[in-house]
Image 1: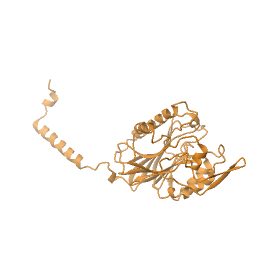
Image 2 (image 1 turned 135 degrees about the vertical axis):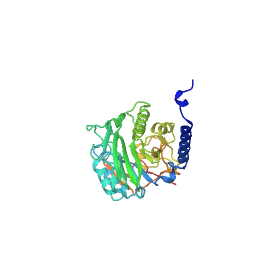
Image 3 (image 1 turned 180 degrees about the horizontal axis):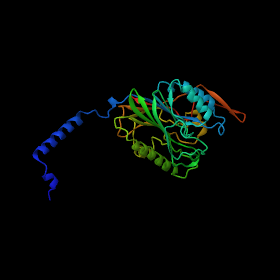
Image 4 (image 1 turned 120 degrees about the vertical axis):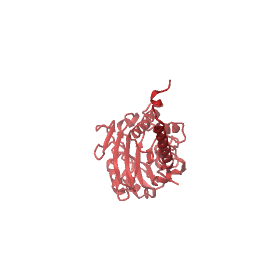
Length: 330
């Protein structure tokens, strides 16, 4: 049966409606789209610093490495720096202080307290022994900063306020959104398959958080950090889906960001573990993304440094057990 409401439309009204629809379609075709051309170029560094608490791990040169990291070539000339495992308070505070001239804007360390954040969500607890170790540093003003603490963890991660930092940046008058995170580690204290399951829940928390922000598609949304997912594994595809991310156009440089053979610290700590590619700077699906977005693992090497433990000296030529990853459009 014909809808009576349709039968009551006059010819003049119908003509006006068709004209309006045609005009709207013309405007839509001519309107600027969320394209690479309209997005500000960015250079983003992510780096797992391995600054564990000196109370628990006193012999890993945290103070020396914290002093050397801001001087390293890979640390220079970035727009944004996302650090993980900035756990030791005094060492990480020194690193951040020395980096302030290059990166005058930053977040607090995730999970260390609620102070300095515009909002805190998730499972934050003031009595959790360790913070989340993530902080975001920026060349550009940070106009909003939020922390979210993951609700799900296993193994030693259960003793940390791990989560992510969300930042909104003003880059030459354009809004850019950067999330820094360190997701569940593959820990011997987790049951078989449990670490991957926890990561999946954490990636979905990132996706849900960003969904709720209703960020315009024309704005870049970048998620960076140590995802603890090997780029060569089957988990990589589900990671992209769960977090709502798109793969980089290219992945270059050293083939492993966590190299238990060639990285002097990783080789000493994890001699029997496989080499893996765990660190990323990726864009959110459905949002602006520069053409040629490339993730490059930098095989940094430092001047030799030596520590002693129980009368034995150990010398290393790296500043962390991970290599830094620098992302930019190429």
